[in-house]
Length: 117
Length: 132
Image 1 (cartoon, chains in turn green, blue):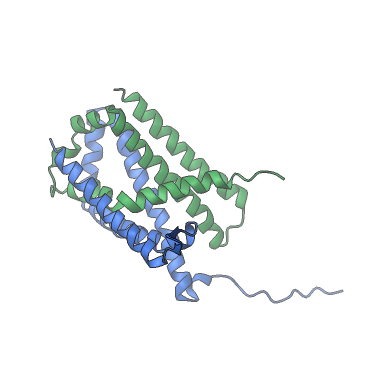
Image 2 (cartoon, rainbow over the protein chains, first blue to last red; image 1 turned 90 degrees about the vertical axis):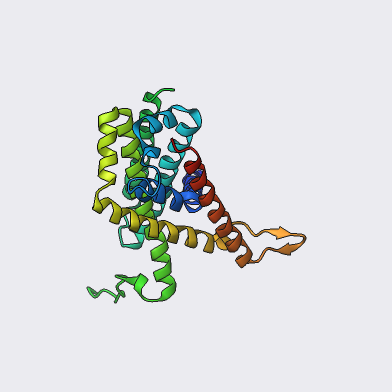
């Protein structure tokens, strides 16, 4: 019997969903509302502060985990969602969704690595 | 020769047929917004790697009214994601026993939601504590 690759994608889906459920609302509030609209110190997301954040190994790992896992979580759900909406080209849908998540993961990893630190 | 095809009921809009399907759809559609937010952050990281001018452009874009509306929608969907994630947790996780008794679904949901509130508060206060 051919082994299913489902557990890998499901684990990434679960990890991303859990991370989003636990801290997602706080992240959206901070990066999209509080800091840009000065409810918090706008310098929180200044170039120098964000550069220092992403040059620290912990900040790098955190940013990478959030972007990659959120994307893999969404990719898995959207693949199933398309089926629900009547798109039944399963292989193509999975290739598109997981491919996009993979691409974003690579870009995030590359950008964070070029930041050095 | 039969050229007749049997009647097949259309599945169009099947999720509108009852409240349970509607909740399912609402929960699954949050993924689109999670992906959108990940893209916003990804662009931020890429712009950061391209230097100060590029990153400031991204910051400036976040200050537009359209971005505010977008993030308010994101915030609402993320809160709904959290709520629904822990609501289905009793079904998605393996059955758990504590002291020989099965942990009740509502206990699992409540624990998850409390954990989320604590985690969000921790992130908020951590970020506030590291303000320059």
